[in-house]
Image 1 (cartoon, rainbow, N blue to C red):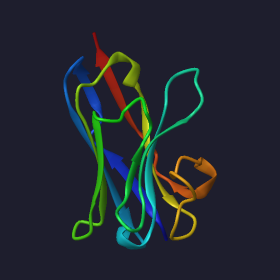
Image 2 (image 1 turned 30 degrees about the horizontal axis):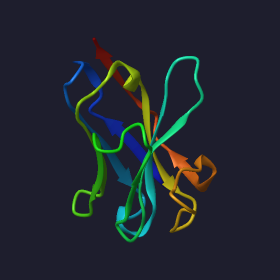
Image 3 (image 1 turned 135 degrees about the vertical axis):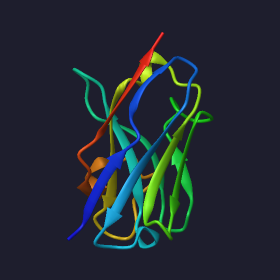
Length: 126
């Protein structure tokens, strides 16, 4: 059974950093496309970053240069290092695994992902 459990969210001041983790079970993270999405109150869920099964990474323009997605095969986990956080980064962050081994295009389509974690909250104060 595929399970994804996020952790690492919290409250930081603008300019600060957080590292989100997503512990996966029931499969190997190395064999699938995985991504991070976020949803702010009153807004639709938006794509943040994807790491494809070949290790290629892609990012939304809003986080490019500030966030880094990675995965650790030994720990079977996905990570999102978030630096230079801004108030507009406030959201619930979700990790997700693709339905098949690949994600189409940049990996920004939520419909490519069939497994989701419960989310972890990130708050940034100005």
